[in-house]
Length: 243
Image (cartoon, rainbow, N blue to C red; front, side, top):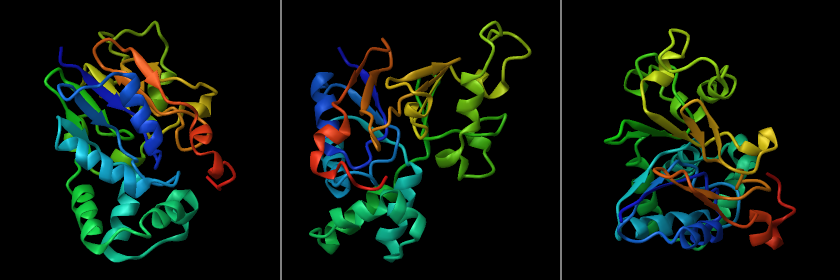
């Protein structure tokens, strides 16, 4: 049976990505939807990009662009860095490209440039890295940066009164637009939770792989999920890095 899996923020943790795909027993018949932030964090950012490109040649994959991917894209394009990016995992990304030749870097740049900011499937499910603010949906979003940075959609979803149902006039219009919304960007560790979180019809799949958490993969139909080991255990020699 064909399945659709959604995968949270990887942040250079190739070992975790390979582990969750194995745990979920994902096959070439399955569709993989990645929510962004493939790079910046652990030591294998360039290797993650290589790996997901190879996956896309074997099976259906959808790659959403995250804010860290935008930083990496700009660096690959211009060679310019900024202090904010370097402090938030960019330093490790630059190091991961130390032995990558120019041709391969250009392939990675083209791959990042081609990523969409969001995806809406045939079941009217939205997959987006962070969020959107337009009452008419991401198609009408004025500030494109919201796709990779917005947290208001998630904050609204998790603070909603559970007594307010979707058919109520009080239910947020943004959330009524889609049957379900899948996001990353905001680690569930911020709420002292280590597994995917749900608020209204929004699912947050970022379980803190960039930090001390795990990478998560979820079957969007059944909501069953699998998690990697903690990234700091998969990359023991990197436990002391700045994050």
